[in-house]
Every structure is written in structure tokens, then in C-alpha cells.
Length: 368
Image: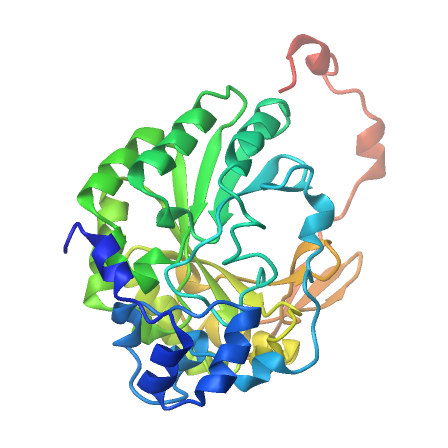
């Protein structure tokens, strides 16, 4: 695999005229869409498109439906939890650190359409402010480096960020969110991987939405990362016309495991302006989860979550396996629809009143 990933990137379809010509679209309409959200498709990812409107096409080729009403600019209210421009601090012990406004290709369903692709919204100068914020908040033990795509940064700039964060004593875990192994696997070079392995514990979450994205090139990139001891997880978005089919989703999850990527999340598509044509019902997501649990390895079963509108965070959504809970029993339904009863333990209240021989244990053993 070539080390010159930037040369591959320079060959991307960027101008509306290029995209319109390549896919037989109305150039004026593509220009109109591009004014609202950037268009860019790497040569590699474009080569995976087999037909107009197929699952790969739908993810990156502009659609007139993006101009329709519906959705909001910031559905997750990230901007309300942004104390400095590059940081989203929603959860108690972790932050989202936005370090790049660029992506190799632009997902038409992007939840950050309001700022991704715009250097004035995610500015490189904000990186130092983000590091300072993390340094002055000792409750932060986990930093998720995102954007845009962090791997759009050069190795030297990315290492500056990782090294700076590793100098902060209370930061335990570093995570990178990237779609590069999917959009531009040439970016995953031996030089990059040798640099990343110096900053363990480091985790990488990748983003594949369809089995056809897991090509030999993508597999090689993922295996380079895994060989460096970097645990890999995958975040999938449930998308109409892409993966809203139980068989397709099961095939994707199984194929991810063959390249040493653990399925992590399936996201219900966010309520983002210009993405209504991608959204499915929540029931469709539950149907897909029922097609996974029990029908394939537990390793292949991710969490199905809704990132709550308005900033409530990720909420797991499960099929109704628990039918009834009483003091005596729990009634359960398995993946085949069969019903089973699990007997509850009988609590002995008198036992609670008996003084234990090690009642002073708490005084003698410090609690962590």
C-alpha cells in the first residue's frame, strides 16, 4: 500500500462539475447542495460504487433530498455542552475533542453537517485551547479524538496532540474516531501505525456501514492497526437503503469480526437537517437486533442506541426479552420466541439484622 496517501486524496471528486459528470447528475443541483455541505469522494471509495443509488453511492453522492425540510442543525445539542470551541463535555469523565474539520469523503448523513468541512467552525487554533481545557479538568480520564476525521491530520500534527494528552496525568484512555480505513485505507501506513503504538492505551473506533466496504485494502489497513495492539471497534449508522436489512447488517457484523473489529454501536440515525431520507423507524432497528441476538456470535452483537435529541446522551434500546418480573420469578423470551422462567432469590430480612463477624471490615479496609 502506497505511503503517499495524500496523492490519492488529491485525486478526489471535489467540484460539483466533477461529481455531476461522473454520476450523470444535474450540475446546478449539485452546486446548490454543495453550498450547504461539502462534497468529496475519494477515488478508492468511488470505485466501490457498482450502480447509481446502491448502498455505497447513497452514502457519499449528493441527493436533492438534502435540500428538503426536516431535522435540525444540532440535534444532539453538542454546542450547548461546548465550553471551548474544540471540546464537547457531556459525560462526567470523558470529552469529545474535535481536532479536524476535514474528512476524506463527506457522509451525506453526517450529524455535524453544521460544522464539518468548515475551517471557521473547527479551527486548528482551537486544538491548544482544547488541550488546556482537558489539562485543567482532572475529572477527565477519557478523551475521544474526533472531527471531521483526525487522520486527515499529518502524522506530526496528530502525534503532537497524542503526546500533549499523554503528558496530562489524569488522562488514562485515548480514543480516535475515524472513517479512514473505509474511505482511504491508504492512510493507514506503517509509519502512522508505528507512531500510534507509542501512545497506548489507545483505542480506535472505525465506521463501516455495509459489507461491501470491507475490501482487501480495508482489511489490510485494519490488520495493521490490530497488529500494533490497538483495539478496534465499529460504529454503524442505521440508514435507509444502505443497511436497513437484517441479512445485510448481520453480514456486516460477521465480516467485521474477520478483520478483528468488534461491533460497538448501531446508531439510530440522528434527526439532522437534510438527512430525513436516511432515517428508518426505531422498530426497524429492533428487528435487526432480534436478527442478531442468538442467531450469530455474541461478539457480533453491538449496542443499538439512540443518541437522545437535545443532549441526553446515548440510550440503549433493546427488544423485549424480559416479559415479566415479580418477587418470585422473571419471565424471559429467548431469541426463538420460547418462554422461560427464572426463579428469583428469596431475600431473608432476618439475615440482614444479624451482625456479621467482619462488621468492622469497612473501617479496616480502605475503599477505592
